[in-house]
Length: 155
Image (cartoon, rainbow, N blue to C red; front, side):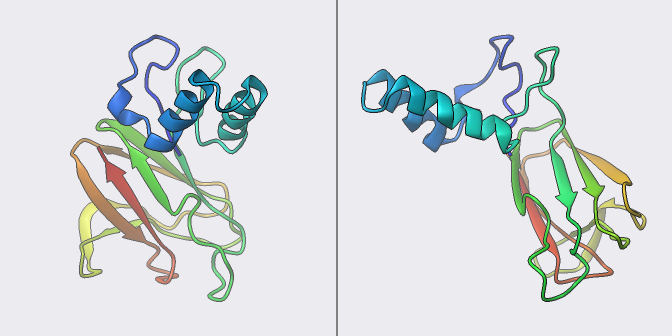
């Protein structure tokens, strides 16, 4: 998910925009793709909630969904998205949409739980939030279903 802070206010930083988005805009500017193709690409990003803009023009908090079926080991489940790129100061919200409880537990590179961000058991519909104030790559998992993992990169 890409959150572009201040997108409508004109304060977005170009370094926060992924290269594939920049390339698509360049191809449109160079006449290599049609306006309809460019608008469909933007529409796709909005529909898939890769870019989120609220009704008042501000960006919303990124959400990580714990989808239904996530508790079954052989199921596709995982977190959606499995990896999230954000900027410093972003508050991330995890929401459990599964029929079973889950946790969000930060871990180090060796897979050990660390006391950075750790939720209680989230029942269906419950959320957990954490504000990321430092650059880096963060790993997390569910202690009840440890095969469910995710990562966040703070740039």
